[in-house]
Image 1 (tube, each protein chain N blue to C red):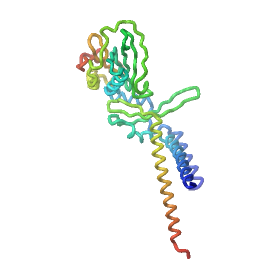
Image 2 (tube, each protein chain N blue to C red):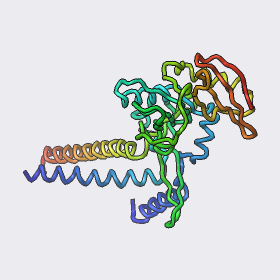
Image 3 (cartoon, helix red, strand yellow):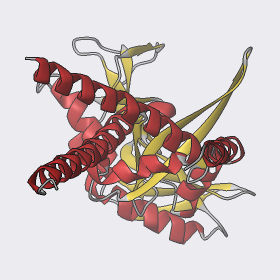
Image 4 (cartoon, rainbow over the protein chains, first blue to last red):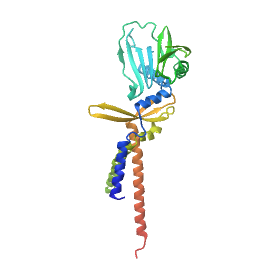
Length: 188
Length: 120
């Protein structure tokens, strides 16, 4: 190859780098859309991993939750601080640094002054391995065009229940389930 | 001793070349991070995406690339940038060392052949 063709090749590479620069990649907005197209990205596996990680952090002591929040690649858990009546800590667990962090976070104190009576539950009171089915059922029951499961939460008001919010570009509805994963109703 | 020094110098030069080649490959085709997905993506999240994030700051726009693995429900795990870069480096380094070995073998053979030919 002569000097001229070398410089042509180099210019071609440089040109491709400047013009291309993103071949084979997608923008973060397109990635989010991809997640939505596939149903929203909520995962019962991640919830179970998060709860297991927290149980390990508590060295086998009973963990009492007031809520478990489920988002794509991120789980948040509000937990009663061991040995206290109403102090709460928030832990997060995730599978993406760009979406809040990888693994279990350090606890963050949650401001709380009310009694936790009737709000606490343990992880084994909910069928965590039914969450994917609940999300699928929520999508079917909500029946929103282009709808996806944006998030879900587990909490206890009277009894332990799961709420899945299904969203499309116009509105959001909430599908609720009991702790066994039995569908209850869709609320606006 | 001298030979070992030469060998180490050659391996070092190839490592530098691998970094240069990797930078060019990255600049032209950021999607190349996907080639490392089989090493990082769990079985239930087999679909690899290279996600481009643009961040604005006082010095202008910075673009970063990160490898993600996605499952059929849209559930995903971020592998990040540096581990795929490391594996890509090993791929390229391996290829360059292989090429260099082929070249050396060819030169040695040619020399041996020349020596074997009778001088007229």
